[in-house]
Length: 213
Image 1 (spheres, one colour):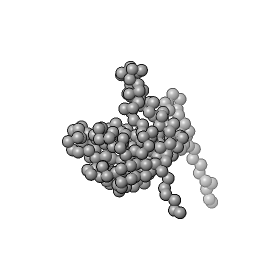
Image 2 (cartoon, one colour):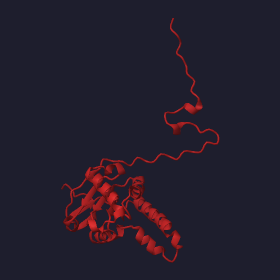
Image 3 (spheres, helix red, strand yellow):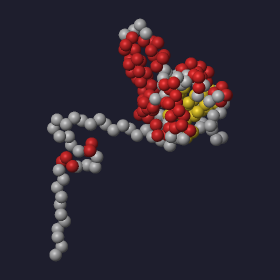
Image 4 (cartoon, one colour):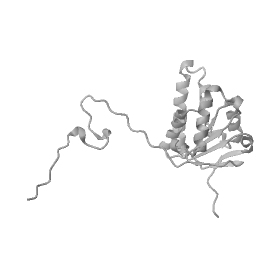
């Protein structure tokens, strides 16, 4: 004689395949929400004398030499109003905020300004302060929240211009870019410029793709 289906009672604390699906026990702290997966299939671009990105995109500029970075951004970014940097915000806060609070306040104000730009569909260029992935992630996530495209440009500096403490980070970023791995960080495209190629790039513009007509 066939047996009736066996029923198995599942306790409340065992339900759901993910631990975050299970009800909290009394007094148990809430777990932080999972981070959005921003990874994409990234492409490594070949440099030309004019690079075009879609309007509303984020372009971050990474460079181990701050002076070279600033000269590059000033020379090649067609719309200077798209450039947002911590240096600019810090300068505005001098004399208005206590010196030991400037960095934190500047980052908060920059994040708010970028979020507003992304929400409005406006283009953004951020010259990065450093070479660590945490800084890149910060801006990628701000753009990804509003479904904006993200791109990275690495401007190579001469060996003598790279501080000893930055050499491991720049080597890691260069190797990951060349291997096409920056899509894992959320960048749709990446571009490396070195030597004479830096000067051969004349403009970075934000404009729609050309019509097929």
